[in-house]
Image (cartoon, rainbow, N blue to C red; front, side, top):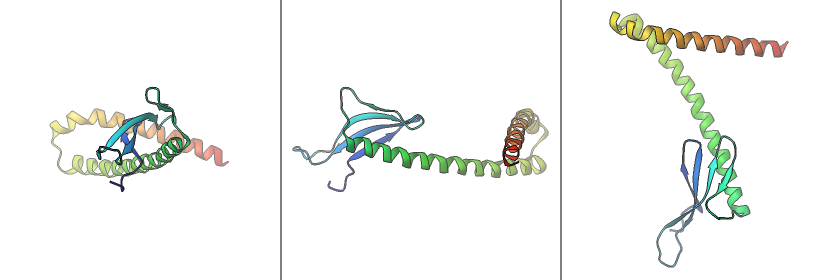
Length: 133
């Protein structure tokens, strides 16, 4: 069990529950001791119970948070690229395969979502252009 990391991060929606991993105890059992809860969004690190985190704990948690933020940012961009594909596929579906009933079911929602997206994109583009001038 010497290959085990010192910490395990159980991912949650806003961060993780951090465990200290102990595989070299006297019972030769794997033990995971919860030591902190972290919030990736606001950077908060809260020790579990009455635990006190040492410098190594804080460093490992900060490193994990930095890596996690990078992973989430990459996933977000991938999701946006997939959304572009989905928009194109939706247009092709509406053009070639959708029935009148199917179109009736989704048209208003799609038009509102696309209008909202267009409004945001145009405003953001205008803001960027204004900053460049």
